[in-house]
Every structure is written in structure tokens, then in C-alpha cells.
Amino acid sequence: TPPPPSAAAARRRKKKAAAKAALPVVAVVGRPNVGKSTLVNRLAGTFRAGAIVDNVVGITRDRTYRSAEWSGVHYQLVDTGGLVFDDSEGLIFLPEIRAQARVALGEAAAVVVVVDGMAGWNPLDADIVRFLRAEFPLLPITLAVNKCESEKASASQAAEFWSLGVGEPWPVSGIHGSGTGDLLDSLVEGLPRVPPEDVGNDGTINVAIVGRPNVGKSTLLNVLTNSDRAIVSDVPGTTRDAIDETITVGEQKYKLIDTAGIRRKTAVAYGTEFFMINRAFRAIRRADCVLLVVDVDEGATDQDRKIAERILDEGKACVILANKWDLVGEKDNRSYKEAVLLTREKLAVIPWAQVELVSALERQRTKLVTSLVDAAVEQHRRRVSTATLNEVLREAVEWHRPPSNKQARQGRLYYCTQVSVQPPTVAVFVNDPRLFSDNYRRYMESTFRKALGFEGSPLRLLWRGKA
Ligand code: GDP
Ligand code: GDP
Image (tube, rainbow, N blue to C red):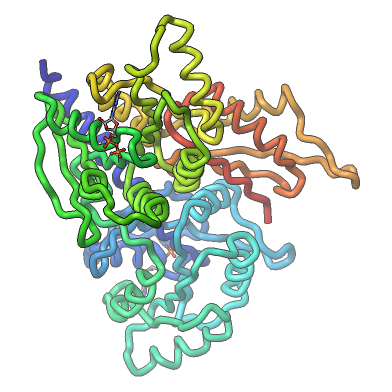
């Protein structure tokens, strides 16, 4: 029976929020009053003449994410609030804003530094750039010189900001909107392109079926697409020869990625493995959830492990299907557990992935596959509150204090917060990341896992230092 409409609506809202979270984030930074919020409103296309902008220096703002799009590139804008400085001590933010700005920058794919073209060059702008270079060295910077209304004056107003050393200064006016096109062209050049349909705007789950030749992928695909519960439709994939098929089970749509590659047996005698790996890697990249099919009779192999490593690197949800379970004779409760353990052992790089023993040929447990995918995807998109995360962090530190190094410097953990989903990513703010060994990091990750679950999904911890 379908759920009541309110539940369905709630689920749709949840899905929409998750989809939004997958878009690349662009953080907007600058000192107070340079026009950040005005510019954010303008870039997000919601500018109203006369909109109220606060003039109070250092006012705390909640991080609000605004969806925006430019020449087909979808992204989210986040205003980090004002960065406040104290000349005598260099860079100091108000504490709340500091935390907000770090979080926003920690998850950002790019940053727009806004300066005030009317006020001209300011040493605090250089401080901000220095801070970004030191703490977020990989973050591409686009420089917006705001308040450049007059076309004649703007070129020279902007030119003095070349000295910041972050490339071309783009003269813009947040109030008038002039110059924002060129700024955006430059900005989106460096952003990952997430096609809206792949972001799962309609809640579609992208599923890749991968595995070595002959493990039973096409048999499984046939089971999934021929099931009486599935409605199948073809959609062209991203590459010329790739075909994706969409199945609908209940309310949920699943896009099965590159089904052409699964159905068509490669007719080349040599290089099959290369093609297989390459094709699998491409499919993994486009997936939300990967169905890794292995042959339970033969056991998982090194090639399977290679694929598992890629799934981890790409940060995808995963379900392991140990297929051909019908070929295993003498089955009892113990042989089931043993088969699962053996499979896990071989695929120890993704210990969080659920293992299910199936037979595609005899349709054993294949009905479970979509619900296993659902569960993994739900964890992959899950958000945990900052309060809960910090409770776990505090407890973890109490049980096991971070070691100090030879100079007797003690590693200190301040706080943590989830900065993104798909996969869930937690930024852990510490005094100095170098003070934390791999061992301690693994301990922290496993503690988070134990406390919070996240079965089916990778979990990333980002160790971030203080300025
Ligand atoms: P924020 O503190 O950096 O977010 O700055 P706001 O967006 O609140 O703007 C600070 C002040 O600058 C406000 O009085 C705005 O009206 C003004 N302002 C913002 N953008 C422009 C612009 O493009 N031109 C001019 N002349 N003033 C602007
Ligand atoms: P693919 O190369 O991974 O797409 O594998 P196929 O689906 O083409 O299957 C390879 C062979 O394994 C075929 O002969 C299938 O009939 C057989 N096969 C697939 N699934 C099962 C299964 O669950 N049990 C058994 N016994 N054979 C299977």
C-alpha cells in the first residue's frame, strides 16, 4: 500500500535536500561590508532592488545555501559571513563566524573572494588570501571586485587587485549586476559538472553493476529488468555506446548505468580485462550505489579487490552480491556465514558494504537487491547533527587520548561537523593534523562507525588544522 501523501511529500523533500547537497559548493568570503550578501543574492538570481542588507560589521549569519546555475553548471553559493580582523594579531574571526567560515570552506569546491573596488586595496584582503592559501591550498580562487558601477572607473579600480596574486580581478556590481557574467564564466570553469538529472532531482538512484566477466552481471540485469515489479525504459547514457535503463520499483526509480556494456559480450580476444576495468570505473563514477558482483563459488579475486578500492576512492555506496550461491552444495547456517566472511576478507577495503549471497540464475534473494540499494543510499545521504558528532568525538577522546609527538606536543581535537553527504564527510578540527597518526585516525573512524553506523557507505574524515 502506498504511504500517506504527507509521508511521500516528506520523502520527496528529503530527497531534494540530499540532491542539493551533492552540488558543488562555492564559498563567498571577504571582509565585512564589501557586498558579499548583495553579490550572493545577485548570483543566485534572487536580487530585489531595495532588498535589506545588514550594515552591521561582524553580524553572525547562519550559513544559507543558495542554488545557482550558470551556463549549465549547477552549484550552491554559501556566504561565509564577514571575516573580522585585528591588525595587531593578524587574522582573527569572531568565533562563531570563524567556525561557520571554516565549515563552508572545508566543503567548498571553489571560493569567490570579494573585495571593495570603491574603497580600493586593503591589506586585510591580502590577509584573507594568505589565509586561504595556507589552509585551503587546493581551493581555486576567483576574485570579485565589487562596487564597480561605472564602466570607465571599473577597469582601473579592478587593476590594483592584481597584486593579490590570485589572477584576474573581475570588476562587478552586486547592486547593478554588471560584470557578473564574466566573473561566472571564470568561476564555473573550475567546477565539476553535475548534470541535474544525475543529481537525482527526481530521486532516481544511479546504480552500476560491476564485476569480472562471467560472474553473472547480465543474468542479474535480466532478473532486475524482467521482474514483474520493474517498469523498464531506455535512456541514452553519457557516452555514445552506453545505454542506461531505468527501472521503477514501487515509487523508486533506479537508473541502471551502462547496461549496453553489461549485455554486450566484448568480442575482443585480448585486452578484455582492460576494457572491463575501464568500463567498470566509468560506470562507478556515475553511480550513487555500486552493485559489486562476485562469484561466490570461485571466491573474490584480486581484480574484485581492485574494483572495491575504486568504489572506496570514488566515495560510492556499495552492496556486494556474492552470486551463484546455488552452486555451493551442502548449505547450512554455517556455510552461509562462512561464505559471507570469506567474501568480506577478500574485500576488506570496504568492510562497511553489506554482503548478500544470491543466485541470479535461480532468482534466489534477488528481490532483496533494490531494498539493499535503498538502505545503502540512505546511509550515503545521511546527515548527523553536529551535537551528536561532537558527543561521539568527546567520548572517543576520553577513551583514547591522542598521542603527543617527540617534542611533547599534544594533539588536540576541538570539534567536528559533517560538511557533506554522498559520501558522508566529517571535518575534524584539530590544532595540527600532523600530530595525528594513521592509527589514531583509523581509531576515530571506527569509533564514528560504531556509534553512528553508516553501513553501506564510505565515511570520510577530513583532518583540518587551525590557522
Ligand atoms: P557584506 O557584509 O559583505 O555581506 O556586504 P553587504 O552585501 O551587506 O553590503 C554592504 C554594503 O555595501 C551595503 O550598504 C550595500 O548596499 C553596499 N553594496 C553592496 N554591493 C554594492 C555594489 O555593487 N555597489 C555599491 N555601490 N554598493 C554596494
Ligand atoms: P557476466 O559476464 O558477468 O555478465 O555473466 P553472465 O550473466 O553472462 O553469466 C555468466 C555465466 O554464469 C552464464 O553461463 C550464466 O548462466 C551463469 N550464471 C549467472 N548467474 C548464475 C547463478 O546465479 N548461478 C549459476 N549456477 N550460474 C549463473
